[in-house]
Image (cartoon, rainbow, N blue to C red; front, side, top):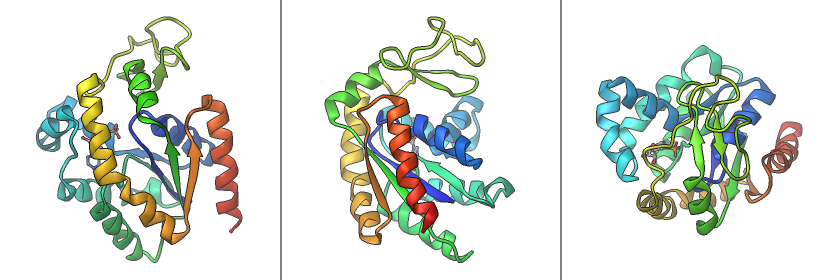
Length: 218
Ligand code: AMP
């Protein structure tokens, strides 16, 4: 199954995409994680992406297209994938469709997790991430068992460089201008599944799995 996760920053895309991918036994492809890893390793891609990411802007489409085409070509994607954070622009969405058309495939479903701006800002301020396994925590709603440490690796949790309030506001603006048009794009295709992102992690996950089971039966 080929799924796309859409939604504002902080809506829970990464957490939910990870849970869904694990449940379905297909890879979660987080373009944000791939880029952050490239920045941390100081690769060419990382050097190209860093400034855009730190300011809350988008990495240029040409860079993203190459990255995603390469990643989707890996053998672990043959049975499907969960795209988390891609596409983020109409140009990326149409490029993805073309990429898949080459193999006579189409996206099966788009999970749109919606959440209001103020909830987003509050959530991101409390977000922590494990630098090793990338597990996400929220100090309010989903805290680690031991304060400040990842449940899986025991590594000290970190704050993302772009989770400061000013950058969050920029990311929300970029989301509204560049990414929100994708809701209409996929809505017109009849594959959009809208989910309210405001519940508990397990309740949102259950709602997503229910929507996806419909897609799987089709
Ligand atoms: P995320 O972890 O998905 O919030 O992504 C973090 C940052 O990586 C974004 O704010 C962008 O700067 C960059 N990024 C991730 N995915 C994309 C994409 N599909 N297009 C452009 N920039 C992206």
